[in-house]
Length: 390
Image (cartoon, rainbow, N blue to C red; front, side):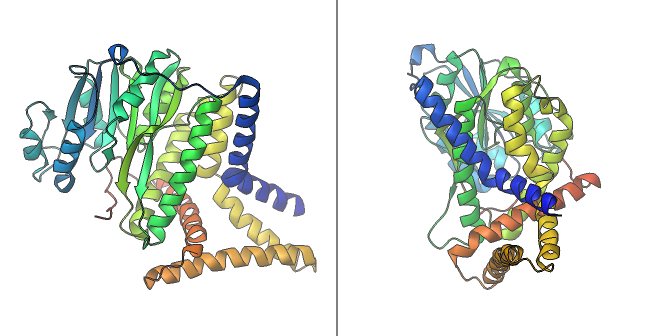
């Protein structure tokens, strides 16, 4: 029991903290021996042609601001195209876009899901690079330049932008937890990229070499992750560019955030099954190490190990060991803080010290729920959007 307990705790700690520490140490050593990566200069004459693709479904509340933000993006004249796909939208989203003739609109009445809309759009894209972004996110004006400058390196197949979540001082647990999570994720992605490659991209902002794009299966849940990882599977790197960022508001509440996390977890299991070739370190030495450490452990065994380590700790504590009694007390305190955070959330009381354990438990519960949902084939690729704070 002791061996299993410590192995379980080691994997849990490694998954959420240890991998980040190890990455940081490796990057520090790499910088000492090889120097810090140099800043990539921007030669506007050499920037590739690019199409910005936005898949939108009933986004009338964001669309006017999204178009305004899109038209403010800096890029050499004649090299940037805009393509909005609004399949299935039955609100005013297509009508708003029609007011801007220099934005290409693709629309059909039937809703087939985001990935089908993207496949349809990609058949018309004829530029070197394709940039994907969501309708409810807003980009910094230099985002496309900062993304496309990396494609001068022929080993680069995709670029992942940074996701930023707006969090105010009175944020609830969903907003504060999501904001903290993405700050930590951004640090991991930065180090992943510097070591070798980012492990997947988020749909808020990412890009691919159009020639490397491979259509994913129609029932794909995490289309952004799969599209980018299929490019990594071809031997190309995914670079992280924090100077290209997409900003959005947090989920409206914990219920909405949980809805999003469960869907991601279900998609994570699906992705692991379909990308099983990347689990072979003999074929993908560095990428497999990063993929397993950063994604696979989180999406598979870690939540189960949390439960197992708690049960084993109880058994060992009842054997009279003071050390295991103290360890159990620490675990109980952590989960008590999470429960208290849940109670405070229900009463709309903000105690920030409770946000992290609460959000941590929500994340791991979502993984368990996502695994169950995927095993029951209950997660559709056409999914219900999580409501966002206005």
